[in-house]
Image (tube, rainbow, N blue to C red; front, top):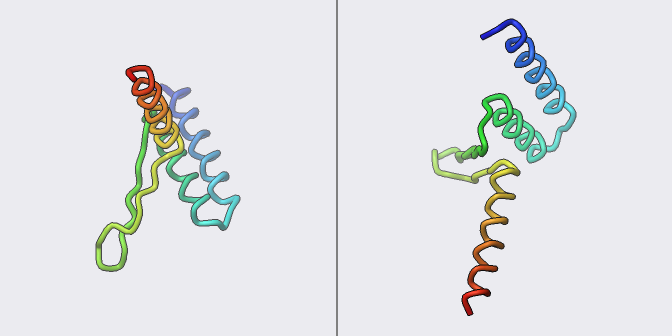
Length: 85
């Protein structure tokens, strides 16, 4: 990794940290963490699974991009189904 690439990653990580610390709202912070992780790893999608005290799945929190993608797929499939009628 070049010095410039490393500096860019550190800058993005610092910016993500600042965004995360701007809110006390759990859902907003969680979304910020997911968005930052996705951006820093150059991932197209991301999902975080939250566990309850017993170790069961409490909730799944997809990144906005995944949610938006799912909506687009649903709309596209609906349009295809409508066209086939």
